[in-house]
Image (cartoon, rainbow over all chains, first blue to last red):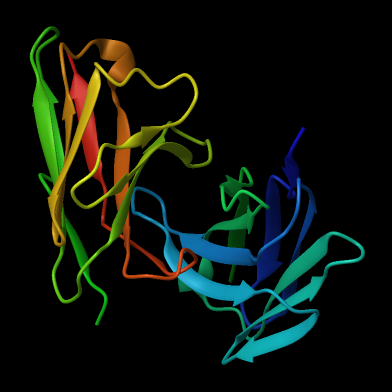
Length: 109
Length: 115
């Protein structure tokens, strides 16, 4: 079966750095997304990785290792507004988007 | 750019009635639109994919006669929940793509409560 694993919840301190991991086992791979979703709102796009390596975009970076079926989202200089759920999603060989359950990130002052 | 709107943002209806949710791409032409459902504290669940002018493709387990999807134009798709029941209460989110599958832009969502 297809599976995406993320930690259910993480806690971090304002101003710090946090890494949210995502591992996947899917039938094929055509890319991986990270989305941010605040409570009661729709997801917003953060990043898309299809090649191995690190993609940096401001305070957020996303890393992919296809051989390991692994990705992480790195958030630097955490702000209170970063408290949200972070969803990892993978496009499989049939171009189906497989969603992880999301990681709820709690930022403490 | 790439703004997607949904209407209504929330709706309360009685059991047995039907509810229509609209999804519009405001500044681009959406060749493909996606409808998702999300229950509290759960991830997104894709319900169906629709391409303009053709029938929607429903995911396994989603009743096509209960969740009617119409993608009549390149900027509008509608989801009608027919004969709604309390278990249909959920957060319904649409997304739209202008071309590349991975470029999905999400609407703000519609919270449906069936009493």
